[in-house]
Image 1 (cartoon, rainbow, N blue to C red):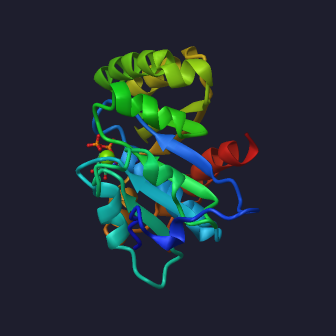
Image 2: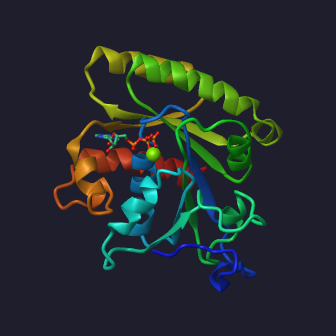
Length: 235
Ligand SMILES: Nc1ncnc2c1ncn2[C@@H]1O[C@H](COP(=O)(O)OP(=O)(O)OP(=O)(O)O)[C@@H](O)[C@H]1O
Ligand SMILES: [Mg+2]
């Protein structure tokens, strides 16, 4: 795993380098699945030979810890511990503008309680915002407040980003999921995919993998992930 520093020579962007698509995974509600979505999305991109950078803005460092568990024979993901500011001269979002030149996808994991200046800075530096929501009345309420704040950030108001919601830890055919579906469909935001509640996520995360990397991955889970990836590919 590489950790970008302000003095790293690998960070210079070159003329004709691809413009990376930057995907912010955010919800101020803790435990909605931000890190799970960020790590699975990164490994999905890496599995198809994209140069993916995974930027961790959460001081808990869970995304970077996941990356440290990944074996060296796996497709590479460039990790950045953006929560560690190495010098006072570096702004929080410096890391997003100084990635290896060949980077084609950037996935940004964010902490619970994301609000204010950091939210605004991250919105300014991304192209897509993916909001994971779990089926629970508390999470639905918290997500409503988060979406309101997101829409009111100066960065979003001046330049609205592509935004989508995904349902996470879903058990279909439950009342609480029907309520979540109703809520997500009522938003004027695309509802892209539902990821089921399964231990496969926990098993994969022990090895720095995504769920689709597992030999016994369910086809339907891979199809669900493909929906999110297709949305990013085609927008
Ligand atoms: N689809 C899923 N199926 C089963 N377990 C899941 C799923 N998604 C997330 N989890 C588990 O739920 C817990 C919370 O998920 P995760 O850490 O991704 O949330 P988070 O939003 O990043 O939390 P935090 O706000 O604390 O950073 C973790 O233990 C994770 O393994
Ligand atoms: Mg997290």
